[in-house]
Length: 121
Length: 273
Picture 1 (tube, each protein chain N blue to C red):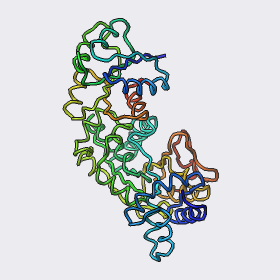
Picture 2 (cartoon, rainbow over the protein chains, first blue to last red):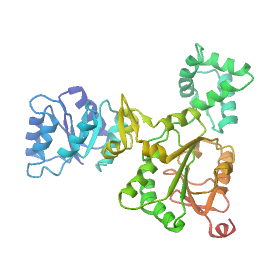
Picture 3 (tube, chains in turn orange, green):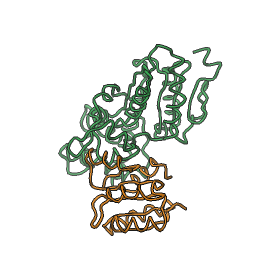
């Protein structure tokens, strides 16, 4: 079973994403900000990370840049999941090492489609 | 929900116009899909819309009802395996066989255009790899409403996230307010036209590759056979018809064979064509 780390400061988003991803047979871990996520990754690198952009303490883009410098940090497939929908922001995320990008609001169909595009399912 | 009498009438008129079969369990969804049209036409309920359609002699309201009940479910790069086969095998083989002649592709029930635009993106990427494929894409649908949307090249955020990889989104689309607009270059690569599959497509000429994905299931067996027969007449002797994932030819399609959703003429029939 693949492991996915859901990183979002909204408990509601984490809950919704967890429900969808568990149906897709992922084992889930959660983090409420980038720093928590980094600590989780240092313990065990997940196969996939669903990542919000704006969060307290450490935002998604800073987390991603830091993650890719960590030993084994190039391995997880990172899918951004954010309300940011400007082309410039999307390009910035891809440049920082994101594999796919999903704009909120989303539903199970879109999440599944994005994970398929990223080669996770 | 419509009464049984109303729904039976709607089903009969829709079948006469588009060939689509509406079964009893579609009463609820069909009623919901007709509500915006009823409001726009100034009726308080869908039942009032149907009552007006019955007495209006020009059939315009029935045409509108059939249009609104047209199957609009689609997505970019639907059936990924099919698109991969098209990119890696079918299109290169066809281009090689046709030499300098233009390869003609027809998306025969394109709904709001995601299928033909996906093909246009694929061809654009072949150009980026130094190839210069000479192609022409025709996309048709019986719904004038869906064809207008396809022609506009405008899609919601939900639509561009279904099947479209993010790198393709930023390469081929730009933001247009809350919507996303496909590039002028790709819009120019696809010719859209209204066309009802119940008619003969001879007017469009002959095609090398015809996409007929997730279409036939909406028709009764007799109509399916007739559609396939008419479309096969427009297929180049060496061409193919592509069906959707899990679809196959209905029984009784003489002279055609289907392997993995790719329909071609049987060898003997190819010589005769």
